[in-house]
Structure formats: C-alpha cells, structure tokens
Image (cartoon, rainbow, N blue to C red; front, side, top):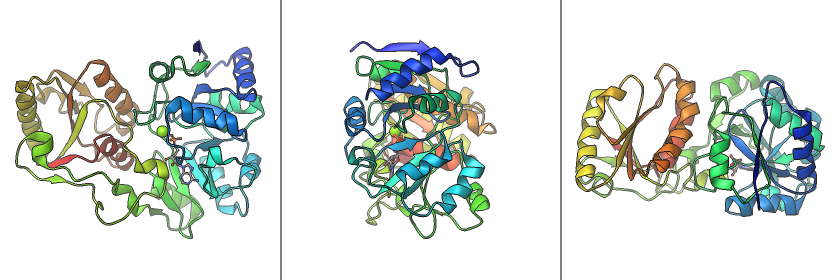
Length: 373
Ligand code: AMP
Ligand code: MG
C-alpha cells in the first residue's frame, strides 16, 4: 500500500485535506493524525473491521483495548453506559485535553475496540486537526499511538512514517506534538478513581477538579519484568532494583501497561543517585562497554550534559523545564535507534510535576533496569 503524507497547518486547517481523511475513516480505513499528546492511528471506533486493522498495522496484542476519541461531550453517551457525573466534572475542566476516562461501555462498541472488556476508554483530544477530523468524519475515532507495538510513541509525522509506511493510506503531518507523552488514564469505574497511566494531568489536578481522593494504580510499578542483576546489565557489583512491586503478584490494571513498551532497540539502563556520582558511574560504564566494541549513548539533562563522554550524548532539556524533557524523550529514543546505538545509559528525571509520567515511560522503555549509585 502506498502511504501518502500530507502536511496540514494546525493554525490554518485545509478543509479539503480533512474531508479526504474523513472519507477514509468513514470507508473503514486507517489515518494517522496529530494529537496534543502523541500521533494517533485512527479508525472508526464502532466499525469492528476498521478497528481490527489498527491491531494488524501496529502488531498490537488483541487484548489491549483502544481509546475512543470524541469531539463533543454528548458522544460519551454513545459509547458509555450508566452514570457520567464524574466524567462530566472532569470534562468541564480538562477536555479537550490529555485526559482519558474509563467508564462502563455500551454494547454498541465492538470487542475489537474494547479488547473484550466491559469498560471503554474515552478522550476528547485538544488538537485542532484531531478535532476537525473526528467532527468531519461523523465517527468516533479509536486511536492508539501510531507506532509499531512496543516502539516509542511517535511525536512527529516522520516517526509515524518510519513505522507505518506501506501499512496505512494516509498520515496527516501537523508537525511536532506539544506534550509528547500519552494521556493520563483515569478509571472511573472504581469507587475511588484510579490512575492507570500517569501523564500531563496529575493526581493533584484530578483531586482538585473532583474534590475527592484519587489513587495511583499500585500495579503500575510492577511491570512484571524479570529481575535483572547489575552484572547482567553492566558487568559490575552495584545494586540494581527489580521493578518495585515485582514478585508481589500486582499487575497494572490497564492491559497496555503490562507490556514492555516505548522501548528503543538498544539496551537501556537508568541510573539514579547524586548527580556527580551518576555522571562518574555512567562515564565508567560507557568506557567499559566501548571496550567491548559497543556504540554507547547517554541521555542527560542539559545541566549535566557536558559531563559525559560517549558516542552520542543527548540533552533531554533543562531539569527546570520538565515539559521539554517529556516532549523530547521518545524522539531521543528513536534517534538513538537511527544512530545504531547498542547501549543507552540515562540519568533519571524525577521532576516535580511530570516526573512520575516521564519516569514511568523511561523505566518501561528500560524494562525497569535501574542502577542506584
Ligand atoms: P495507547 O492508545 O496506545 O496509548 O493505549 C491505550 C491505553 O489505554 C492502553 O494502555 C490500554 O490498555 C488502555 N485502555 C484502553 N481501554 C481500557 C479499558 N477499558 N480499561 C483499562 N485500560 C484501557
Ligand atoms: Mg501506545
């Protein structure tokens, strides 16, 4: 299949392009489009065969449900069943925006979209191209991130093309996205709302809007990855944590948070600790891996970037500008792949607001291999 990539200016949307993309969605085809979080791979959410094409294009496990994207709050009722009071309060504050809610699903939503669950994930994206496409298509659009399953989510159209060329008919190229990591997912089917995936919208923001307690899924830290020893990943004797919670039997509630995900092709290891010691240890590791003939990369904050000597050193952004770190992270992981890096050592980024979301993605990309120095 030939994949066309059409530029579209989010500030001055070409209606003819949107009409063409909307016609493809109505015809049961796939269209990749920008959202404010990452690029999405869209299909008509209520058309079973269209939704199943998403799984085929991504190589996505069929038990990993899709998020349904809407452009009007009323459309929540088309896919949800039952009470939507809490969703309404959240929508007023955060929609359109990077928040997905899980609500009881209606029978109209095919199992290809829900992964066979009785609940459904819904979000109104805050990107003009996404909203225009949903509106013009007259459909609800199921859209996971537009990457091959397991690879880092795409934050630019070039990333989508790298994974989807030849697999889908159209990519709407609206430039680089604003946020760069996927939406916060909040499960409203629990008595106490539960965050299944951290994102730009934090627990504190949700609690303020709902005026009630919100919990973090305790299974989030337990990604089920096997315990790795330091000698396995670095050839030394320092302590490496397993995923906290591993071995406790906890599993993340969102099916998609259970898989190794966001991962570059290179081996990725995160180092935590006092910055000076982290830099010293990373530089030592880089030298020892280079001695084995490996090409080694480092991900560092702008402040400490100049401390490192490696084949490639990527500056993720200043620690004070955590939005920049979030926006750049997936692009950096893809760049390392393009540069044929074999091993990546990364600083950790426990920044005040988005640190939880950034570290969730980085640790998943690393298969939870963390070295404490
Ligand atoms: P993506 O769109 O690729 O960012 O992935 C969507 C995420 O939402 C995955 O982690 C899914 O497992 C999760 N998800 C979608 N629907 C549900 C649901 N009904 N219950 C729990 N998690 C869900
Ligand atoms: Mg995804």
